[in-house]
Image 1 (tube, rainbow, N blue to C red):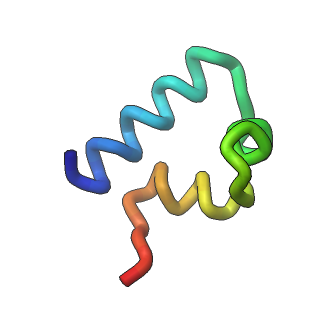
Image 2: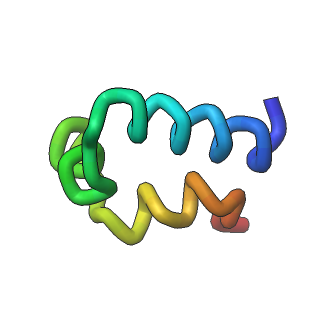
Length: 45
């Protein structure tokens, strides 16, 4: 799965669950900024 598809999938799941990026970050142990980067297809090299 490429970054773009994963990001869209994550975004849709998060919205269906009525969660914020901050809440998702807390659940998986990352910052809200990391969740945002995942959703927008930004990855670290």
